[in-house]
Image 1 (cartoon, rainbow, N blue to C red):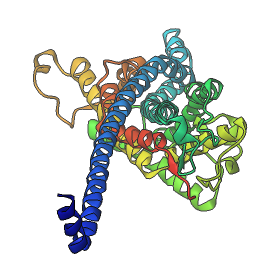
Image 2: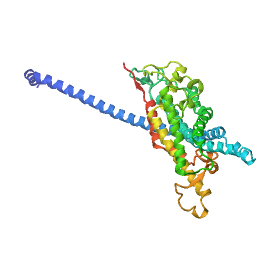
Image 3: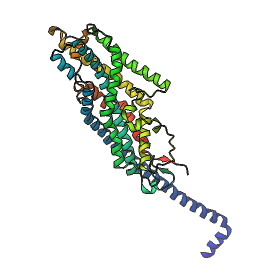
Image 4: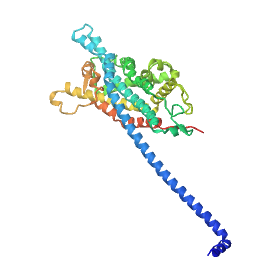
Length: 395
C-alpha cells in the first residue's frame, strides 16, 4: 500500500503539489470570502443602526427646536408690543387728546409696521433656532457615536474639535451659543422694529386717513414696503454700507453687538484640517458657521417663502375682520370680495393691536405653517447631517 502511494507520488508529484496548493488557495479564498461577507453584513447592520440613531436624535432635536420656538414667542410678542406701542396712543384717543390727527397717523404706521415686524420676527427666530439646534445636535451625536478607536485614528475626525475626538462644544459654549436667540427676541428685535417702522412710515405716511383702501391696495402697500427694504439692502451691498436691513443683513440683529460690530469676525477661511485648540476659537468657529448658514441661499429662500405666506395670512385675517365689522349682518354669510374697502382709521382698529392676535399664538395658522414647513425641516436635516458626519483628513 505504501509502495503504491510512494509510486503514485513519484509519478504524479506535480499533480500532488499543484493540487495541494489549489486546495490551500481555495480554503483561504473561502475563509476570506466568508470574512468579507460577515464584515459586509456587520457594516450594513451598523450603518442601519447609525441611521436609525441619528434619525431618532434628529427628531428629538427638531421637537426641541419647536418647543424652544414656542417658548420664545411670548417674549417676541412683548418686544414687538413695546417697540411698536399702540396702547399709549389708544389711551390718548380715549382721553380726547388735542392732536388726534397725529395720533391716528402714528397708529396707521404702527399697524403696518407690526405686520412686517411679526412676519420677520417669527420667521428669523424659527430659522435661527433650527440652525442652532441642528448644529448643536450634530456635534452631540458625533461625540456619542464616534468610537474612541476611530477618534484617535488619522483617517477621520470630528468636523470641529481636538484630535481626541471631542468636538469642544461643552455645556458652557452651548449656553453662550443659544443665548443668541434670547438676544434676538429682545434687543435685536427692538432695533429691527425701529428699522421697519422707518421704512413703513416712508410708504404709509403720505396716505390720507380718509382714503378708502381695498384689500388689493393693502397688499400692494405691504409689498411696496418690502420692496423698499429690499432695494435699500441691495444698494447697501453694492456700496458696502454697514447699515442694517432685515433681508440681507439681519445677522446684525441676531448676533450681539460685540460680535456683529466686528464684521471681520465672520470673514474666515475655514480649513477642515485645522482644529481649534481653545474654547474661544471654537466659539468663533460656531458663530461663523451660523453666520454662513444664515447668509446661505437656502435661508434666503425660506425667508422669502415665509414672507409671502405671512403677508397672505395677515390679509386673510383682515378680510375676516372686515367681514365681521364692516359688512352688513345679512351679508356676512357670503364671501368677502377683494374690492371691499376700508379707510386707514378703520385699519387702525381692525389690524391686530397686539402680536398675540396675529403671529404669537400657537393656534395661529401662520405659526402652524411655519413650524411644520417641509422646506424648513429639510433645511434643518441637511445642517444636522453635515455637522453630525466626521470629516476626512488626508493621511
